[in-house]
Length: 305
Image 1 (cartoon, rainbow, N blue to C red):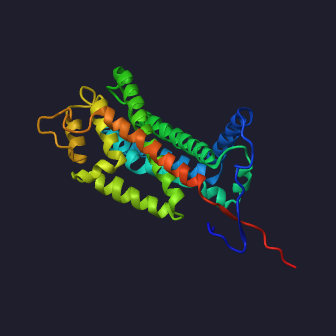
Image 2: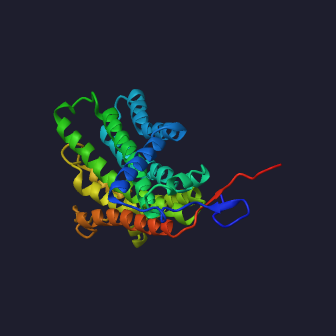
Image 3: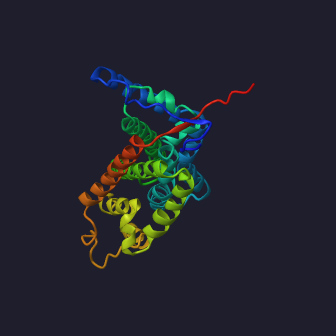
């Protein structure tokens, strides 16, 4: 859909001419958020993303069913801390956040949004919040079900249920921060390019897939780098899963230990959290600014005799 003036296009109406009051904008924001959530949690996209979120748990069940001696520690590391953060979470964020405004353009529903007593920048932020919520719901569900598939009924884990539950909560929190950052990034991409899916997949493959695994300073601009530092420091691997898990994570993620078992030479936890949150906030504000100053064009029916 063209974003430039054309013979069969017109700029969608803006909310600037509609007076905004505290009594009108509150219910309008709530209604818009509910509408966006219904769009995210229904339809073919929801079914596809739900199946994608269930994939790690299905892999865990198949692995346990075909290999009775499969290590729960290996499955936890491979599925919870490799597959989900490097593959599942970026895709969820890309699908939901990249089309915050583009989906409305393609469906020719922008006019209905802009007649609401809400400025365009706030429309973007509300719809982004709904996209984040949908992605977070699927993320938490995927992590919880995968933990259950890995550890339920496993011999020797009955007395460690509290530790496993704590690990699940910490993993949900860290991965949730990553989802926030990803949604901010892909939402911004959706405002600056129409080929956001192509650009987003390239970003996931190059930055989060390749650069994040190379021990160069370039990986400090990736989301997964900060999430991995938090995972390494905060999750209670030792004592429950064996002493080799930390060294496995360090080798896989190219973290240089050399006596620095707590990674004091790397960004501290508070800095990692700050980087993930600030990435989301800065990207969201930039995208909202672009949205507020852009003329959106929608197609109008062509009259035929």
